[in-house]
Image (cartoon, rainbow, N blue to C red; front, side, top):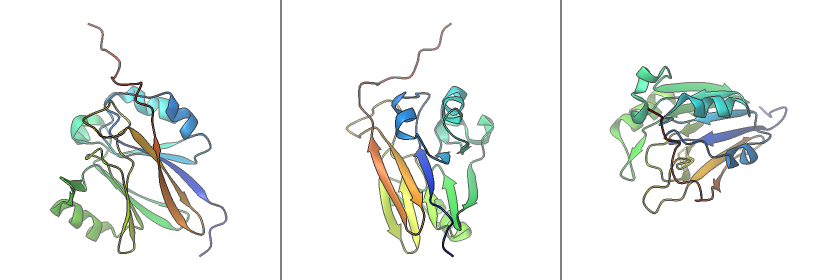
Length: 173
């Protein structure tokens, strides 16, 4: 099936309560934003919703379902099945639960976070995409977001965020 027009996704994860204003520029024109968990403050989602509709899952920092966001989600767009879950890889390897998730959902695209390490590679017919971390800088890992275009071809890319934003806002009281 040839899609009518390309759909553009903004992909983000591991914000840990930090909303970097540069995200507005990088996600301008996207049709949907996917947040793959470790959101932190709900205000991050509110800021993203000012750009485009948001589908979000929770992560370990969010307390999973305690956050009000599901632990995983499946959406269908432009003929593609997209599975979203925070933990799929750990320590550079596909986890047992991650493998079971992929086997159960059989997605065209699997979007995840947790490792803070960007990933854009194929596992069989599934695009595995981790946008990296858009939150406070940790270790030597770059701060990043991603974009996925779903048209005649499926493609993902990473966008580096400047490291000048290094910590989330402080809580008063």
